[in-house]
Length: 445
Image (cartoon, rainbow, N blue to C red):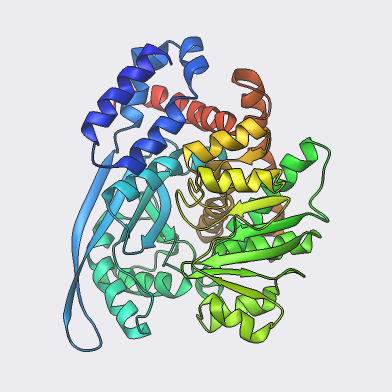
């Protein structure tokens, strides 16, 4: 690697030695930038890499709330604004017991490049709390959200920082957060949060956007290699918002999706998953996947197992970071998988990616593939600013265009600076260059 990249990595590792996932994300980006550093010496002269790897701001705060038994609970809240050179910080809130500052920094760092690739005017940020909404009553979730927003409201705004949903934060949580923000600020500032209910300022197709966008990117990859989705056998990890709507769009385009999962295990339905059943279980009844076999007796519930050992043509990791490791990758390749599209943030480990590259598997990186959600969040901000309501088809068509543009950006920069078809390098370089140009324009800040 270029000496400047090595030097920057050494500095970042010393400063953030206790945050391995963040360091993994930084290394994954920086190691692809060699040819760009050579071509643009001003990047080193202005020390853009070290500046880019240091968040503009980080907030950690205590969240105190009462559960239904009247017991006082204490959680920790986070918000990291990593880069605002392209626009206000934009990125979701994650409520999950694994959340810590390192996780939030990793997600916010990835968000810089993801948001840049959309071509929209949004910067990179992320936030959340080590609160687990699973098993909590609606009242408990509401009280937590109100307590969380009682601190967060000081740091956000439609032209400053615009949170959205992520794992553990859906329309219910966004509603409670917005209600508290409105009460505390005495303003009806629709653009301060995205992922809102359509009835009061949300965008049609936002709920589906990340899953749909994941499939649209995969469709573009296949088209570039003169193939199509119809007839492909697919597996999808996860069963949350991203996974569900990836399943739906894959089925709409003629694929057969045979498996999905949750943290307890996986479902294998050889004749194809029933999307309506999954949606009812996960979004309406909030059930675990194990119930699926009670409705579809010909399906198999595999307790404690993931989906990667199931033979497939295409695999879509849509759950969480580092969920697919080297051993899983080797099994997928052995079973004939020809395409991986990362619907989650960095779900494949570096060693897994190496296996896929060696085998010639088409690989779509998360910062490009799952950008559909934040893209439609930005479209939601546009609708709010213009007091407009676009139709589902209008938003979906704009999403499809954006995902096509993202693919072409990745493809272009892969061919120009790396190896044709290396969409990881293409995404990193394409996202970085737009941010770097803005950093140079803004001066030493």
